[in-house]
Image (tube, rainbow, N blue to C red; front, side, top):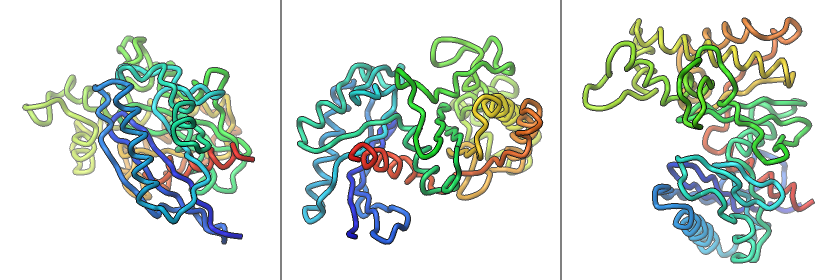
Length: 321
């Protein structure tokens, strides 16, 4: 057995991360032997972003001429067509990204196998295969960041859905968000009360800005909460309870063996960002989960930024079988 290599790309609204992932012959956790990041510059439009992605992949391959990669695995923002790897839909965070023929064009231009999956789906695959979900039959994974996304992995396979849109768990109905507009154009969704953006907004609406010169963000409120500020603790508790209640509803549908939460809004390193987050999520979960599901573990992801890169590489390797 020899080490295997995959070029892996994580495409988000802020940055494009590219890596050469090494899969050791001894079966230990894959790791990057090369890493690079460039800004997405999403406002420049879908074609400009595509050119930046392709240039990043070529730069990674050229920087590692002695490494023979098996292909390119990509975790991409937006809804990915599971049949072709094209971008079926993206919201205003990535203007002009909808319709970009990401997979087909890269296959033609690079002459390599290319497999594309949603970025949060890639994250979930990484955690399910190599992180805290390793060895578990089923893993429900949510990423809490600027927005909220998720994915469900069962028996090693990620649920993509007929349109590739499975996992938009930030856009489930949430009673705490009733009447609050959501970035998707609807209202009443979880993302409107539990994402980093929403946490900052809720604090400003209730108490005024943390910094008068700019709107507050989740980090501002989290820092105050960790310092014991009562106002910030109230906001984090409300966000955490709403998130936990939605997790309970999702568990009632999917019955995962474990739930994994990732994203800098909710954790720092291997532990919860604050005791308030941990307690409020568990309180919300207990309020909605059916009795047989009350003991479902809610864990913090362990792979952090490597999770989507590993998951995208795993998705590529699975496509070659």
